[in-house]
Image (cartoon, rainbow, N blue to C red; front, side):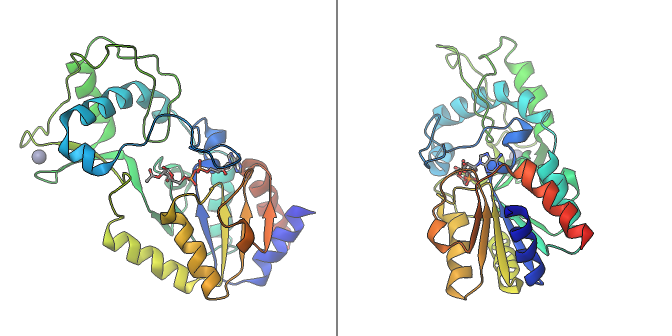
Length: 274
Ligand code: OAD
Ligand code: ZN
């Protein structure tokens, strides 16, 4: 069956690089961005240049993030994250690149990991570059805004959430405690490039790899799709575990349209038995 074929795929290649996306974390209660046909759901994504330029955009971001954070903070790695950490320590996969910002691979114990789009648990000051834990900024947000701004429904990986009408009117955005500068979550927004050192690290991973396994990503965003393009261009085979459509469907040697949280633990068991 599918798991056996995937196990054979891993067995054939010495250095398998795994590229993960939001679909891996849906079983941890964090919704993904696109439906099975690849259509984007939810609010329009924040644009990085707008975040930097407009206080109103930052206000909207932090108001939604304050509401969505508790749900994001309590998310735990699922069986898929744990299986990937096991496959790495067993030597069945070489390393991981994730587009997710939820930090769940780290918590599951993956070691050779590039968080391409950053990590939502960190906040940086755009002016003095100080770093803060997101949990600390949450206490600041709550102190500055004692009345709840929304329902906490529909969190997304960037801490997005539904707001009550008028919630933004007197919402207070905390500044950097050192320099009163602008705080930004340490994640890559649309319109902002991935930092150069991180891109270089990911490119080195793809160069070392001799096969690629995509898990839970539509690859609709070029930042992830480019790794498939590069693998395909150098003749490296690509497999995917993904419920819906992916932009790389016609580049795949093998595709399992199944839940990552179901398939990956079975895969880890089969690999161990070999
Ligand atoms: P998407 O939401 O685009 O894709 C998630 C994919 O996972 C979809 O194709 C789903 O069908 C599939 N899926 C959902 N649940 C699954 C499960 N349990 N098992 C297997 N597959 C499942 O998410 P990404 O491709 O990660 O960027 O999105 C890429 C980037 O777009 C994100 O990193 C973010 C976003 O805008 C930035 O924030 C810069
Ligand atoms: Zn500062």
